[in-house]
Amino acid sequence: MARVVVDVMLKPEILDPQGQAVQRALPRLGFEGIADVRQGKRFELEVDGDVDEAALARIHEMAETFLANTVIEDFVVKVEESK
Image (cartoon, rainbow, N blue to C red; front, side, top):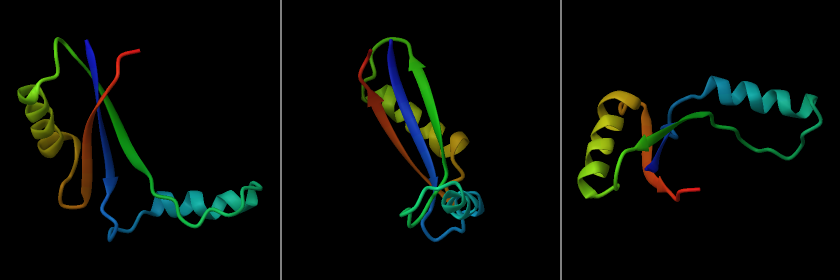
């Protein structure tokens, strides 16, 4: 069994109000020196069998059509090593 991770983030030109709220709260909590915060989503998929090119293509299609809103979000698909 393999793990594939899909990280989804708002595109850089899209306003991130949640990230901005975290950034404004950090100094009040004693965390200084953070210039910017962007919030995203992480999906961890446990895949039966090997993750070959066909499986990655299927997961990429899943991310593009279901996990991310590609109008406002970018995504990255990567395979993690088994632990």
